[in-house]
Length: 346
Image 1 (cartoon, rainbow, N blue to C red):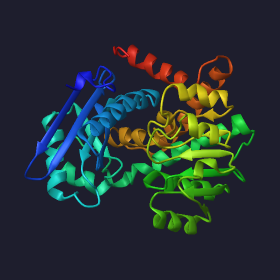
Image 2 (image 1 turned 90 degrees about the vertical axis):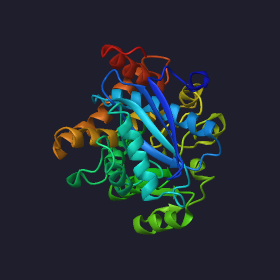
Image 3 (image 1 turned 30 degrees about the vertical axis):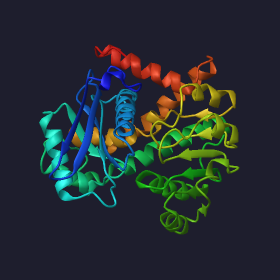
Image 4 (image 1 turned 45 degrees about the horizontal axis):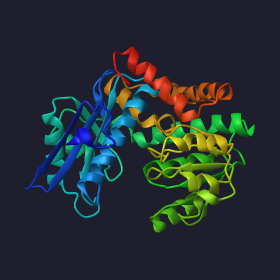
């Protein structure tokens, strides 16, 4: 069944569970475990169909394999999705049932928070499984590390593509101000950037704008703002043939997963003269945070590792200058080399 799905990519494990008592309907996908146990967040979303949920978990788990490899941490890629409305259906019983589901895999998959789940939700899941990450009290919320990774890569991209050594005065359009996007906006405000922002939750977006001095605009127009940098931090597939043609920004760096609608859009960005930081590199700060939470917690080592993401981007940028490849393809090649070195077959 799962093997015939177009997004199936030699996944190691795909399993689903329905628990009538709690209302849980969930899928866990392990894409690759050659570098270590699969790790990735648990997303709760009111998917219209089971197939839509399956497509998401297959794509997201594959992305986690590449993210852990490009971040050079000893994990593989996995993801979980729960088919539910997080605003109405999320209950302690549902989260506890999810914990039982994760525990049943005996460490093949390690979960954490994602869209539709919070740190408190992971704490509830953790009451039923040994295999949850992100709840170390002194570590805070790993979303901050994700935002810091995006910020570090954005600063490097501005230096390389715009000749701006800092983000002071840079015009940045931020799409999505959730856990990561709102934290990124605060970092940008502290750095002296000019910020436009948008979110589907207009009341929340307005509060973030008022707190940071950003300009609020519509979610449908944010990518068309005459900015230096466009930062997608909501859902995926926002970079496509139509939107790329409408972009005025010369740099794209954001925290959303699966930003490219198709692999061809990587070359579409290059042809348009737009410098693109591959999403699974830009947003890897959070998973790096979880790595240190599960090994030896060290804020200093975490900070150095996150700054290293920007150095990897600089390497990708220089490689792209000497080749005809898109930056996404170059980042993929780096990740695949590391996976093969560990005995994987990507």
